Image 1 (cartoon, one colour):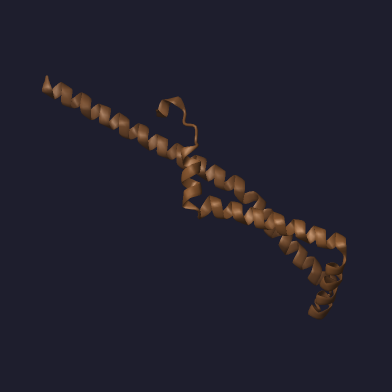
Image 2 (tube, rainbow, N blue to C red):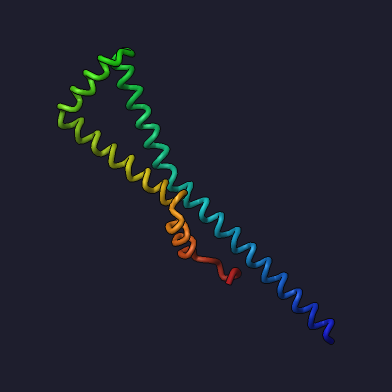
Length: 122
């Protein structure tokens, strides 16, 4: 009888371990999706910044003094000031999102706590 009871306890322990492993895999996959979703705006911001620098360099014909003059002219144009300000806001926001998703331990842990687990993991 004790042999049967010990076998049942081992089986229950294995089931709990398997359930715990599946739960961890589900949480890890959810974190990966969350990080990927928040990385997209950062990548587009970097591409936009790179294209802007490339356009400025190309418009100046490769001359840094001419690029400096064009950028100074842009700074005097109110529309360009607003555009550059908005691009800076988007870039800083996307950088903050990247930091929160990849490097802020408290943000990552809070995200994990908020994940809705399927019924079979409880």
